[in-house]
Image (cartoon, rainbow, N blue to C red; front, side, top):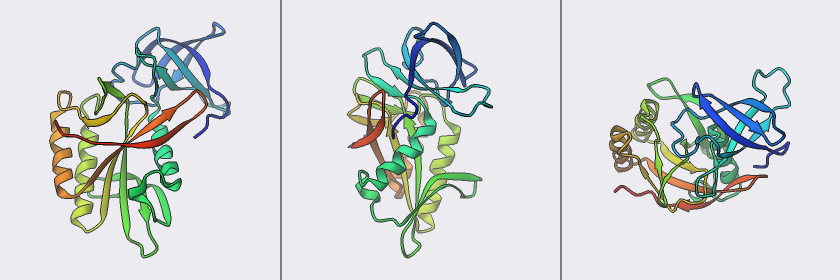
Length: 235
């Protein structure tokens, strides 16, 4: 995935109201950018951090800038825009990077399913109409060299795990895929210290037959792509 037009750099002044951030651009102008991330963004929203924004060509948008990248305290780029995750995963499937998901003929997005009024991020269908339900979770929190999810209590995340387990019960294939938008993670695990209930449900889903996998991204100021599989561990 390439950024077009190119990103604009600046300095984070503050993040507030969950979806907004004030940024001082390199030219000195202060803008308010949309923040497409509902999490706590621990370690990714420190005032003074270098950030990069995209600018929409849609002149009717109230906030034309969107916060895309931040430089972590260790100097690593982190992709904080959760709306990019589904596209990154779909792109990686089509490119053959996510080898366990090769062979499907069609990829559908945001399909309604389940008993709890959910939308699956990606539904893969093969030539005999067998279905694979893929729920994508964007990961930005890293401690040491371990990526952790979620970075805030996630009731919605728990609902998605229950829906995936139900799909397995009905005879379908179900996948929970962690999209780690940073390069300094070697493993991924549930953030039991932040949301122990999610950790319990993730372990149950794994035992039930939901395929839990994680892929790490390669990031530059020009592009992001998933390029390597990361082991998921349960401490």
